[in-house]
Image (cartoon, rainbow, N blue to C red; front, side):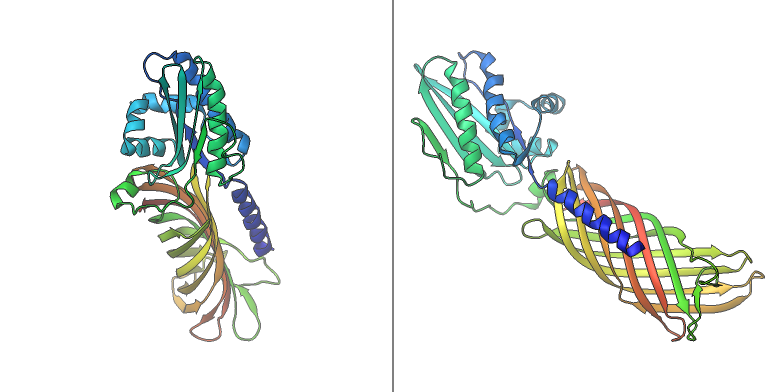
Length: 378
């Protein structure tokens, strides 16, 4: 029943991740030259944002949050437009994968709007659109809607409508080649998918049942007949190391090592001490979810363990040793704090049949660990 419940929980978690697969995008206020009424900034920006929201393919950052972050981090729009490094840094503070910047120019009575959609982590322009028209400053609002519509189409690789309408130009590079990023640029950017390695510590839960070779099944911790007494789950502190690496699309590969010690005293004051070392590798889905990098994957590993048993008077009775290849799962989420530092939470479960070194105490084991994780992104 436990295994079935865990599978259902994993499937539900995967469905939630799939629903949150949209990229996070921030539209910065348009930059105006001197001599144009500044009251058109908000309508122009909102018109462009409206088209991205309408597409339902992006999570669009609220304009008020952008203004607050600009103020807190002491950035200026003109600096962001002119400096790719500052734009990447600011996009990271917004946890945005893409940033849209737009500018307005005027030549006599003709107005021109240009907008670019930039991938924050690389500085690559993934889509660009422009529009121009004669008239007063109010035509900028109309042009903003057109530019926003065309920019969304270009970002999604849609050619339809890209050339319709006079005075409108769209550029959407097909799969732009991304230059290699230096390590310093990667570690300075707090947004987007990332690889990381870290240490975790948390609460471990383990339950086992073994046979003495004659088919007499026991609860390992109380040495009670399972037919008379229910099996017990024992808690302890578990800790370890793990790493995850994004693959193509939404997939990742990972590896983990964990150690835990379990102590138990039964009703007769007999004591049991057990330890486990797990080495596991896995793969699964990795998606951004509300600013967190969430993941869900399967594990296959190697488990080795041992233990000792004393009676109530403190006399040693027996020792145990096991090894096997359990299967399981992991799920969790990580988030960058600042620079390359990450924090997260992780839950894993491993299930398997472990063979004893004596050949008579083979055991069926189920081990979980719910832990906090501190890592380093690269």
